[in-house]
Image (cartoon, rainbow, N blue to C red):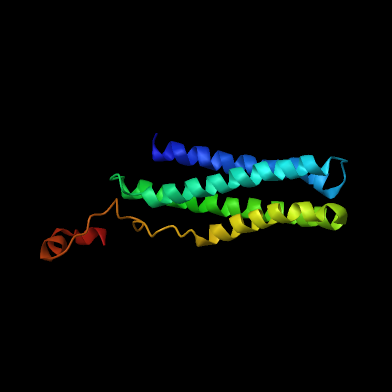
Length: 160
């Protein structure tokens, strides 16, 4: 499967996790009554998928440029990976905030949330460890490097 297709699936996985926040928020805030065990199971599912997506993004980032891709394509994919990693961080932060709110509203259930809250915080911190390597500079794929007197002689003075 191509790199672009893999990245698209990862982006959609992260987007789905972000959308899950809107589903769980009414239950976490107490505006809709629900079962805390079901909510914790939902959080468990989301954190697992988010962690998997982050791991896959790391692998994809590490493999970029190794298959002789065009420098412009590599740069484009690196930018998309950076955006996806940022989205993972935002989703983890949103869910951590939901859990903290849930803990404040339901102190009796707070002990059950500690493990999941820690896992969301771990995912958030792991996003900071990913560094997208520097790719080709803008224009590298457009202009070959010209050096020497031949390049100066070919320049049209009327275009300058």
